[in-house]
Image (cartoon, rainbow, N blue to C red; front, side):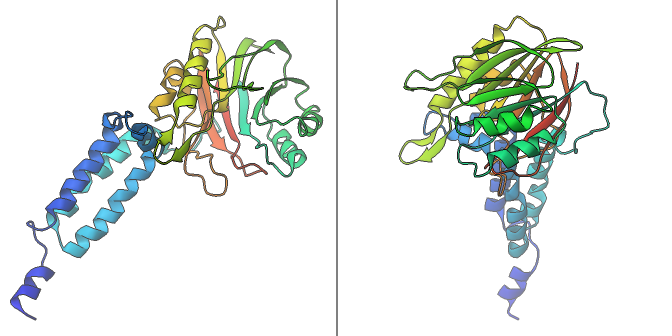
Length: 318
């Protein structure tokens, strides 16, 4: 072995400074994703959508540090690993389903292309939820959901393609206008109802915000979703009842700044990562349960149905 080969085979503090710099950059991105601007292609929202997955850079950098025999690169990985743990510490524990609760709610985008709406409805009926919010309830599939859910959740309201099924009586059900200004045609994706629970009235909102897409050269297209989120945030801010639950497919994660008009006013159910989309290999939770004057004590995903989303359930304590 030559002298040069022996030098490369030894661990060194001098090699791997670029890898160490990348590790510091990853830590900064995890801790302060808001520094990434949205001005160009909504890049900030895109980073925030997949923020937990940025942590995968740590094992990749670790492998490169080992190959480079770089001490400084290996030591630097403590920083992004620690930051990831701090940022997502509250999402790592599993749902505590033994905690006391007053209400079980369930949120599910059932998909307009669902090949078996009746089977999906039966699976949801077996969940034991007191309230079930659905999106993409198409007119042709609506009778299947009504028939399967009626025996356990006899009260329901549907506006456009969103619906709410309840174990308790509903009152004052009405549309909530969250339509973006440029959207035309028959587009109703917001619903508000008063649920007459044994413990008192509860305002429940069901919403389906516009989808987002990554397209060149525009980037991450969130404009309609952000506009719809702002409209929903204004509606729930004006709500007169103190106790409230908001359920929906928001096409945004809790980390996405586009959802701030909604998340800033509510307590999200976020125990565990609970990725809900896509159902085949979930990478993001875009289906949410949020509350006001109530506490989410557990949340989890249910097995896949015929939808491209997983159902998300939560238990709520007043």
